[in-house]
Length: 76
Image 1 (cartoon, rainbow, N blue to C red):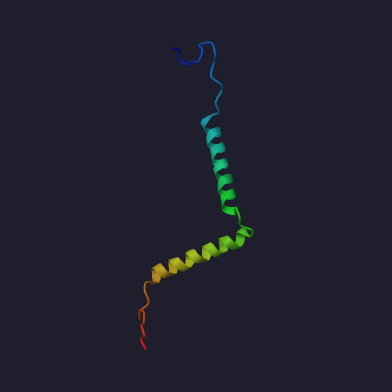
Image 2: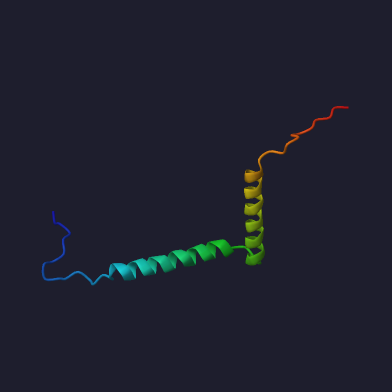
């Protein structure tokens, strides 16, 4: 049975430097995130504005705590 090893006369193909590799990976990741964020959405700006507004409301609810009076139940 033979082993799959490269011949000693052959050299490995040149690989990109670590900085180039990181830059390409970062660009590809950003591109994928933009595509995923805008997939199926016609107006991206309005969606982002709604998301920011929702986050602000959630922060306000966390900082203000529960209402002072609580909930009222009325039974008739």
